[in-house]
Length: 617
Ligand code: M6R
Image (cartoon, rainbow, N blue to C red; front, side, top):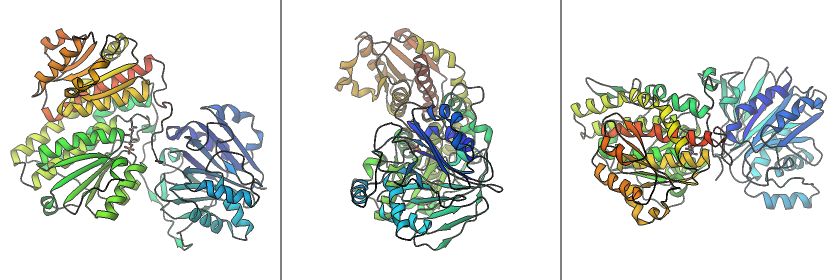
């Protein structure tokens, strides 16, 4: 969950670390800290609880200035409160071993007790602190640093990534990775090397990278990288070049990354679809999905897994695979799925969705599928080479959205929907469920989605105005049916996470089974009621809310004056194909949440208690 950065080279490490941490704040921002080493082995540590506190303290920290080697960390607290002491880096008792860490040391209590018995002194409440203590313990036993680090990684349980410094080795930096928690990427510069938990921190410096694999340890100097596997055998160090657009990570003219990413959706959707949906004659090309027509014909079921926004996209994916693919489909929350005993087999295709490709619950579920069932897997992912794509041996539909920095996912939600729509078409054609004319139609409709989304964005002022007219609410309901039920869920999630207004998304038919008791004039309802097969039923649900004095914002079909007259606020959606209408209704769902949050002065890009990538359970 946390962000990690490391540097070794000829420049002053402090400013580079600080800048890297700024870029990584979407991974956690409860506290942050850095440690730097000068060439004489003098170690300086600066750490502070609170967002921005490190940057404030930095200019007066003279001890930091001389270091050319350093590590930094931005924390999302798991063990121990948000205090200066619990902030990373953490040190051994003698202070000569310093580490930053991402993950959870599951057996830390037993290790801590043992280390205390051996004379170690602990100053924090974190699980992390056992790591420098253990490394120091192995060094005292005569191990060199790479061996001590490897032995430590073998002792600690759980998924963990560690970056470390040793005062007796002042020109080098160490890293290790075990399990699926987070990742470590090594950046190769000219006469300098970098380490980071993920790519955004490296963007200003290099695009030549090597991801550390599970079980590997690495030693970096300004001129060289050495890597060993878990048995201590030398591993290849050759970097790969990753295409990066530095402009894509800047906010540009937008007040928040979230807003920028919402507005990027037409472009992002075009990029997801480009070259994959061809019409006249219709063809779907999923370049990184190796399943043949025969493989797809053998399938009996599709199971989609993901968390949060990705799971909501998966809910729509289920409908697409049923309707376009002609196959039974279901979705599940990865964290639930991985601890059930699901009955899968080679005839179930498992499709995981993860923007980051690093979400621990989804990785766990995918491992479970691989180990217990060896079912075929595809992943929908936004980050080339991410952990999910390694589990599927590269079988992936990349979203090609560019980095998503806002903690609240937006462009990757609609892009994941598009990816699943394409997959459903691919399955439908292979199985003969879609005839050529149907496929042409389905893909033609999808190709029009970027301009549909653009039209919805053009009403942005209206969404802001509606948000400003809603009563000061502490509860909000989002209602939808059919294809718009997942959008109601997603709208409510956006609202909760960035505005801190309690919001729930319901299938509208569920209202009378309990939630309607919440309705009064202080609880607005956002209802999605397009002129589709479920329109009449949605209108009845809206009437039920109005009859109880509820304020209703209806997202309805353009020109539906009858509905507009019945509700308090009306958001028109251009008439469009039923299957792609959720791409349109997603936009006001996202922007209403955004404006509700900004009107309350909330920190939209870094909402409290959250991190962009969830790498702990
Ligand atoms: O990277 P992933 O798509 O696997 O992340 C899954 C969820 O953590 C994520 O979708 C989360 O719910 C959103 N950031 C919420 O906006």
